[in-house]
Length: 456
Ligand code: PFF
Image 1 (cartoon, rainbow, N blue to C red):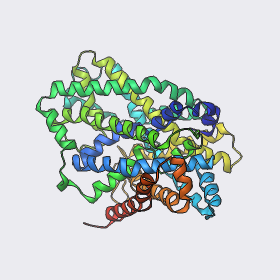
Image 2: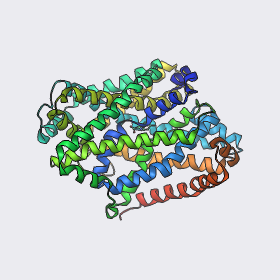
Image 3: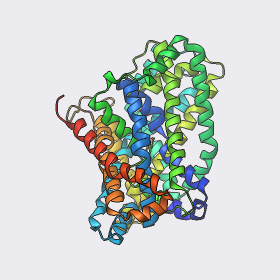
Image 4: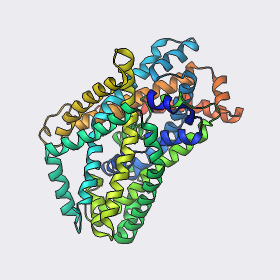
C-alpha cells in the first residue's frame, strides 16, 4: 500500500479489481491460516468461531467501510487524513490520535508477524527436503519443537522474512507482488479446498467431529475472554484499526461501491479462515492431537497430511509458498505506516526510512522469537513477550482505534455525505446509522469492559 507503491500504481487503483487485490492481500494472511485455527482450538471451538463470524459481519464490515470512506475523503496518510477530515467537519484535529495509535499497532504486530512469516518460509524448505515424508503426529511435533528450540535457525528465517518485506517496501514493488497474488491467492484457495477434501477422505468420523467442534453452537463454552478474542481477531483479520485500510481508501476511485467491495473482502477472508479450520481440525482429532496446542497448530498438523499423501512433498512446498506470499502481502501493508511516519517526521528518504523501521521491528521481533525458547520464562502480567504483543495489539489497540474510527464516522461526520457516499436509500441508511451510531460502539465498549474485567 505504500505511498510509494500506491502512488506509483495510482491509476490502477481506479480499477476495482486492483483495489480488491491489495485490500484482500492485506486482509488474507497468517491471521486466517495460522492464527484463526489455533485461537479457535484454544477458545473451545464453535462459541469462538460463531462470535468471530458475527463480529466480522456486524462490526468488522461497517468499520472497514468507514475506514475506506474516511480515507477516500481525506486523500492522505491516516494521521493527516484523520486530522484533515476532522477539521473539515469542524472537529478537533486531535482525532489524529486514532491514526497515531494505529501506526503503533502496526509496528508491534509486524514484530511477531515476521517471526511467524519466517516459520512459514522455513517450512517451504523443510517440506522440499522431504522432512515430513511418512511422518506421524509424534514426528511432526518433534520436528516443530526442535525447530522452535533452535534460536539461530529462527533468527535466520525471521531475518529473511523481514528483509523480504523491507525490500519490497523500499523498492515500491508492492503492486508487482499484488499482481503475483492474482495467481497465488486462487492457488491457495484451491489447495485449501483440496486439503479439506483430503481431510474428509482420511479422517473418517473425525471430520464430523471437527465440523461440530467449529460450527455447532455450544454457547456454554463462551467466555468473556473468547468474546474479546473473537472481536480482536475480526479486527486483526481484516487489517482494521491500524489506518491501513484508511490509507488504501485514499487511493480509491469515486465509482467504487464501498459496501459491495467490503462484503466481498469479508466473505473471502472468512472463507479462507474457515476452510483452514476444516483442513486442520479433522487431522487434529484423527491423530489424537490437542486442539488447544497453540501457535504451532498448523505446523504440526498439515505436515502429517503432506507426509502421507501422494505428491505430498510438492503440495507441501506449494502450500508454504502460497502461505509465505499471503503473509508478505500483509506484512508490506504493516510496514508501510511506520515508514511513512518516519519519512514525514525526519529527514530520511524512503529507503533509509524503510531500513530504520525494519531494523527496529526486527529487533523487537528477536525478543518475541526468544519467547519460544531462551526467554520462555520471561513474563510480564503472566504472559511471555509474544503473547503480550499479541494481547496488547489485538485485544486493546485495534478495538480501541476501531472504536475511534466508528465514533468519528458516525457522530462527527455529516451523515448526509455518508449516505451519498454509500449510495443507500433512507431505509437502509437508517439501519446503517443504527448500527454505526449505537450497536457497534456499545458492543465494542461492552466487550472491552467485559473482557478486561478482573477475575470472573
Ligand atoms: N490481516 C492480516 C492477516 O490476517 O494475516 C494481518 C494484518 C495485516 C493485520 C495488516 C493488520 C494489518 F494492518
